[in-house]
Length: 439
Image (cartoon, rainbow, N blue to C red):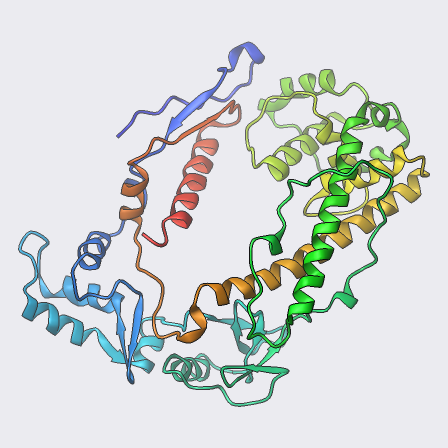
């Protein structure tokens, strides 16, 4: 196992901090492996064993987890191998009724999930379509019976707004551009090509989903591209003229961001001094709130739990956005509000403009993302048949695959060493696991 450079905390001044801390994260299976993982790796390499969580064959269901369970119970060892006769017998034992697959082994048809409604009833949701099947179930057994029927290709009876492959469905949210909030007008700026992610630029239109016609797809795509381009222009203008905004910071109501429950931790005392040096204009913020807001900004915008203070205009836009409400992307709202201030709009009107921009950004991005998810569903070739689950994966195999490469996380981490190390392992492991699902 590779050694780790200590991730040190700091309660002294900047000189006590390392310039950077480097952690080599490999063989994470040492921390997250399970006894059955190595058997999963062995079995998925054997010809004749489906590399899928489940496979439907006529009215029976092969369940990979049960195969692993039966192999473990049989007393076989990896060194002794498995004969063809034994393997055939074990696969037959792992092929069960749909009811057992669902009730005992937790198999759910890949496109569905079970959710609880606001009234407390259990509902079946089609994930890519974000649509509900008919039926509200009071007990787990009731919904499991419905899932077993769906697993074998059955249809849940009832009514819906539309149907797909004979299955009635009802959208959980409408797909309608008429429901979008008003789009703020951004004009008079030099045209640029946006580098923002555009959902519908990543997919092509596929017919077969009644709520989304080709014309609706094209309309939403055009609206998304136009908004992403316009808002990028506004953000670029705001950044280019950030000095003018800093000179007006006293009238931007940033004092409303002071919070009585903010408190600087002991290890952050010197960081407050650094922050004051970086942002002398922010005297309206208390030490406690300045530290808390910068810490929140670094985490929310950059996913950094450890940081060193430095002057950056993005923090100003983050603060401006925060004055208008609680947003997923307050920096975006602040950029649009800053653009309006630079266009000589009164502060109150500029903040309202930023709010309107935030609302439209959320709405058009959500609508485009939902349509893109549907198109990916069709592009992946799933609609023909759902008689097979996803590929099997396991933690040991995922970590071993990742260990073939060198991964370095380089950052000046200055908070509690144990806390940062735990977050580092959790973050790296989560990324590895997500990227290795198809291994």
